[in-house]
Amino acid sequence: MAEIRVNPTRMEMKRYQTRYQTARRGHKLLKDKRDELMRLFLDVVREDKALRERVESALKEVYGGFTVASAVSSPKMLEEALIYPKKEGSLSVDYRNMMSVNVPVFRLQVHAEGNADHYNYGMAFTSGELDSALRALNGMMEDLLRMAELEKTAQLLAEEIERTRRRVNALEYILMPQYLEIIRTIRMRLEENDRGNTTRLMKVKDMMVQAQMEQNAMADEDEESDPATGA
Amino acid sequence: MYKIGIIGSRDAVLGFMALGFSVEEAATAEEAAKKLHAMARSQEYGVIFLTEHYAMQLEDEIARYRDLPLPAIVSIPGQEGSTGYGMNNLRRAVERAVGADILFKNNEPAQSENEERNKP
Image (cartoon, rainbow over all chains, first blue to last red; front, side):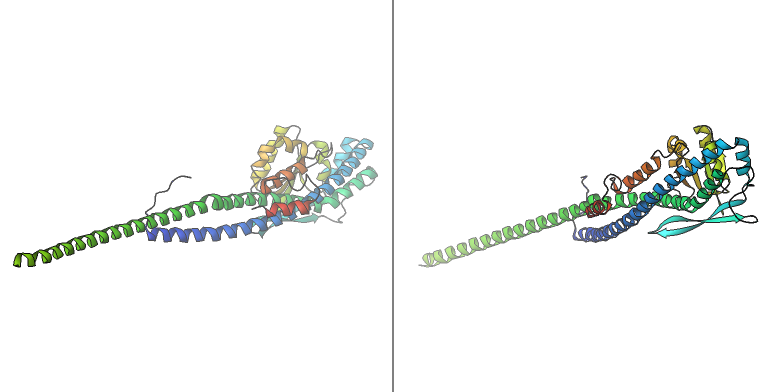
């Protein structure tokens, strides 16, 4: 880890302690967010998976119907039958907030003209297979849109989860250890200074005591020699 | 109000005409790409369906719109039937989010999911 130079002062330590606490709180929140996103995401994906399986097998049958229809009637006729839709499908899009991810919600709006069955052709020149294929396709529309909605949601959630996970990891493995390391360094420096101070004081005291004792000893000597000179 | 678009080979998309989708035929992948971008840029489309055959070849182009809320570009099987590409796509989204494929490899999603969540 890159060494970060900080002033080994109590104030600096206090500041880093506050930052560490903030980081820890943020980390916890982001982790909760990630877990909840994950839960939503897995629900969405599971539903999408089931839906896709259904849609894909249904679509296969529809294509089969169209193939049969195109075999029994001429391509031109088929196109004529289909090309002018009796109704117009469009979407209204709302947005839903899923853990602060905006995901679209599609709602089908069908504008039909006249009587609203889904056969936009006369019955005379077309085959029955076409009818049933169209009916099946028509029934799938809701599913198709729901699938589109779920897949988009899954993609958007996946992106958000990835981003949140990176943030969680950055906090957990980089930022928080770094703060702890800084706090530890400062504390050690302070303790070292403290110890240095204590030993210096003890040394000074020792020196003072020594000096005192020497002085006392000298005074005693003087006292002892004084009566001798007096005598 | 948004339109629903579909791009694919002629045979695959013919039926969708009758549903009132905006149908674009594409004979080649380049053509499909051009039409896809035109649709996506017009901002008029909420959903664009694309047959798997083309979706597979236009992966990079589709990825550009992946993280935008609209349009939703969804692959559907073409006339040749499902190639599993759509499912594969879904699996990759799971991998991207979770970091591992936990939904498709083993068939006990509930258990593996818990394991995943218990990881730090």
